[in-house]
Length: 183
Image (cartoon, rainbow, N blue to C red; front, side, top):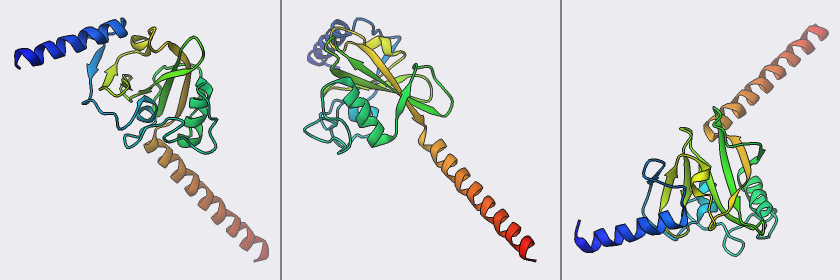
């Protein structure tokens, strides 16, 4: 790595440490290159093709506001997330943490991976992995104000299949009962 590149990297790391005093090399790692194609809200919702903002992409049934509950509404309508009490890792469940500032306007969202680490998109910058949501609590992002959850998609498909299988079994049992009553 050349001297110019090293200076650029050092300046970037200094800025990150200033913006987010809770991060360190042991609790935060770079996860991708910088891109402005998507933002933190979209990334936490699993969308890396577009930005989720009121003026870019927003579900038609979701509340339109800068208040953090509007982002909660977006995740509910777009992805099926519902409120939960904490960010504790749960088997088969994925979670999102919504950050807000002192005016209750949403500032950031992070997604919990199945290994317990959190993924975040830092503005138009890089995606990172961080060990806790507190790593990004700062003057810039505020604090986590709400956690959301849903079944991990693989588990959701299994649950739907189980529901369909149960419905088929009940249908077969009803047919058998009907045949026994008429027979």
